[in-house]
Image 1 (cartoon, rainbow, N blue to C red):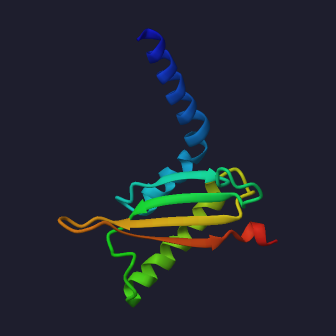
Image 2 (spheres, rainbow, N blue to C red; image 1 turned 90 degrees about the vertical axis):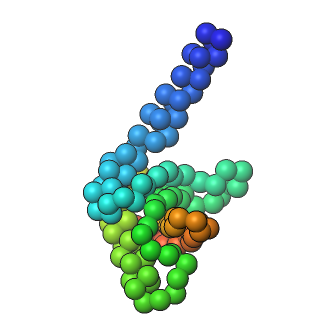
Length: 127
């Protein structure tokens, strides 16, 4: 049991410090920009698929339905995409990311989770 505890703690430490810490400044900036969004940021290539582009993935909660096609929702989505890309350029050290994947979800009581993914080419990769 003692060995299992050490291995589990070591694994969590590795995951936290190596995989998530580089994205903490971006997560903090997203929280400051979009209150209550509970962001989760990670990045890299798709596993098991060689030659795929490096993707910066951002998952966040939104107070509107991201699947809606009305003008108000589309405007809010575009604002979040643009602002997230700006903050990513400012706070993510690695400039090699080619795509930004923004996963938006909305939770409403007693209803299904509504979610949609938006992808944007990172401008630095286009140069």
